[in-house]
Image (cartoon, rainbow, N blue to C red; front, side, top):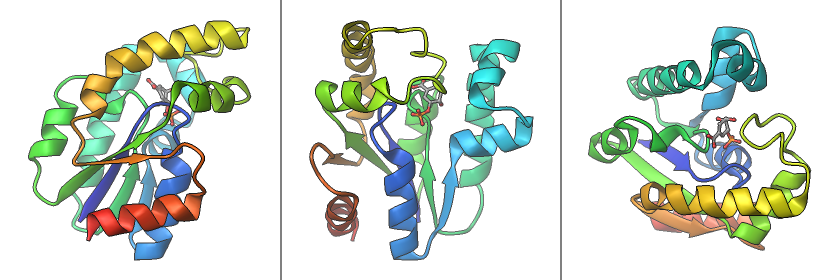
Length: 173
Ligand code: S3P
């Protein structure tokens, strides 16, 4: 089985993904890290040197390549991954792939992302918490339509990693 975690930046896809893969003894792949490894550059440098469209093409190709492998795997995607091209359709239609939306509130996301925005090119220019919150509100609204198509939705607000993993395991099996 392939468990594909989707959700907005800061929703905990990488941390939860690693924890659940440890619990299930599945491989863990972080899509952003795989792209950085292939490109030998961090995400911010890929965006500034090659542009967002190039990054979206890499996301699409690397995700499909990971999911073509036979292994049981947990994949943490980037916040925008399912929102471009036909990726969400592909994920919902591919056998053995379960999509999980880690759903976080606007307040949780703003708090988390304000201290971690530097490495995220889409928000690194937003200087105040208010401008960040306004950006997330609109962006999350646009993307929620896609995120909500996931097979499983788990709310992450005010929950510890272990609790989220337990809840997810119950929903998966
Ligand atoms: C993005 C999210 C990032 C990364 C890139 C673009 C997005 O991943 O892929 O900066 O479009 O939401 P995280 O969700 O891991 O921050």
